Image (cartoon, rainbow, N blue to C red; front, side, top):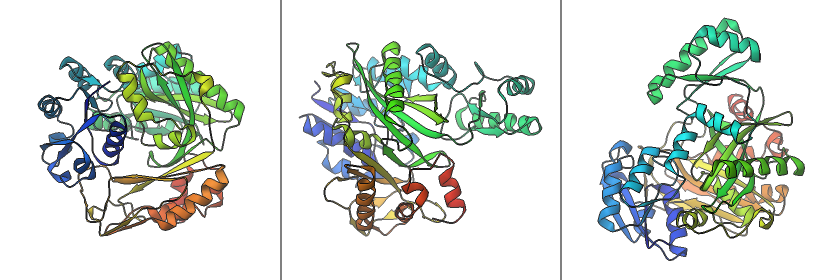
Length: 448
């Protein structure tokens, strides 16, 4: 196993990785920008290296600086966390070429799954169900019109090289297809430097269901159940739960086993997530995330498996040591993402935290790098904490979450805690009857 791991990230995920390393007897190296010199992960790590000024391109996205930090500190491996360079195949290759272990899948698999067209082709070959759509990039409006006639409206244009909702446009009929096609290409070019888009049948009211998978270098693969990530605003997840209130045991078994077999066929090694849209009893693969997910704690809570520890073990060449029949699921877990944003306007709210008290008690976990007096910088993603709650049943989990949210105090900046508290009073959410469009409507109607 490794003696020292450089954590190429910041915030709560850097702290999460540090804790897993410390429990495994592995020393850590924290990296940081000048804006994060006070950060908790920097304070707790065995060593720290300043990468540069606040902009991510000059610090957390600076490949040369990261590799230099690993070299001068004598690190054995680099854990990328999520975001930043976690799904950058070129960085993974550079890490390996310089003699370090990249704690994640191979650069080849990252590259394959990073392009949505090649990912879809690989998914079909691996036996995954996919949304009806174009086999590759759509080159012209005429081609798009012909495909839309075949699939039926509405249709969705998506950037081949992107995510996060950028380069995505819906056409409801021939009258607006041309505008949707050209706008999607323009947005894709601006956001990702690649104007190519592909087209899919647009599902009206699906749920977003994802399956956590693990594969080792010895040919063993398992799934750790599904997560429901349908509560989204502008394609960004707000709350996740495991297991999904929309599925029955037969459906869970089917989609989990389908994902597990796909991991085996792909030869995928390390942790990953298969993402699906689910509507009217059907699952449709949309993408695979070749990294740790923000919402991984809900899976940990219902399985008792430390996913970061497993990532490190797998990267070190260890076998999983268990098979699918050994996996057991216990109770229900929900994660609330807490962002430094105005809960009414969702405008970013950086600043100094003047008061901080996190909830506790049985089944309550908070992943956060916050503490009283720390500065939340304006340069990065606005997520500052994750509240994760576990209970024997979904109803007991919801009651515990309501109590935990009432205890959570973050002062000095605006946060989205009020939105989560009001979600706890929504009959639609409490009944588990939401889909990926519901939260947008909930917010637009002023119920937040």
